[in-house]
Image 1 (cartoon, rainbow, N blue to C red):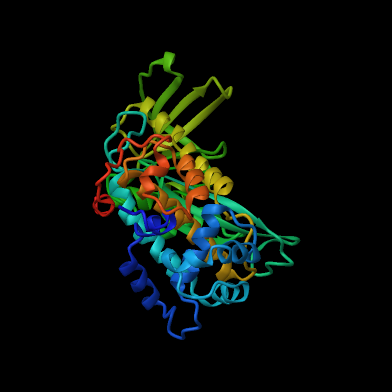
Image 2: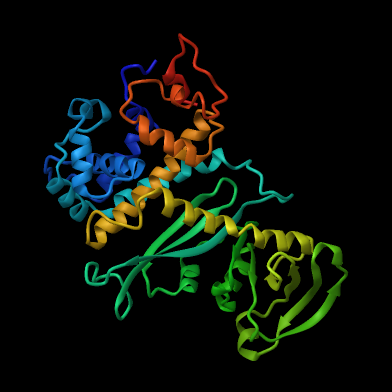
Length: 389
């Protein structure tokens, strides 16, 4: 049993230390020891995310108030505002980015059987970006507008479990459509994106790779209809056509036929026109695929509301990116915990419970007895066996 380990230490035991050390070694993070390692920094930033700390001084005050427990929580360096500030500027943010991808690789198989809400085999990704506003005078490297700074978080979200699989952090001026150049399409997978990513030369890359895309068209895109299919008007569908691009430049970039589906959204009182390179699914499934894109927007809303990525503990680019990537790592770590401990509680509920029990020395399952765990620890249970599942 984990009666002698804090909830925070039990949570962090789900983060593979060996893989973290490999990430540190890759970028020489602890090459020049300063008494505060990359792991100490990760623990501090994770604690700040889980408890929504406001500043470095806030982090220092809270952790020093439980000084006697820090060693058993995994801390080895002395927690102070100055050492944490130095670490945020010096320790390469790519360490935490790579480690977040390690956790993503662990989490994705756990959610591979999650339902999409409609019948479809294969992986479905939603691509979008969110803008995080910054003060240009405080963050002069984050160019966006003449008097405003910002960074963008471009995210490719696996809709089975809402696990991010690709994240790129750029300045606010970076055009969304350019992120398509960074994505390697998976054959047979579906990529759902809004019309901000409508670039026929880039979309043809998905066609050549054997992947499928679903996006919305723009009013100025000229197309010529080749074939029409019957649709069930009672479902909201208006038409289902096979089309080709009509202008010479567009046809040069995308010479293959496309499928155009028109759908009437009664709730929003608007007509949506979708483009896809998939001709096998029903027209209604194409509309449902695009509707599922809202999950990536919910993901952005969730992490902005429940994690710390709108206010930062450092002003440098390295500090900002390290904090964002740690937030992603914490999100995925909580998702891993949910599956490994078979918790029925939502990610929000789990995060809330963790925020008030991190310093408790109790088996972590006991903290969720009233929030929907489907497993109840027996008096002689071995907590270590649960962590190995």
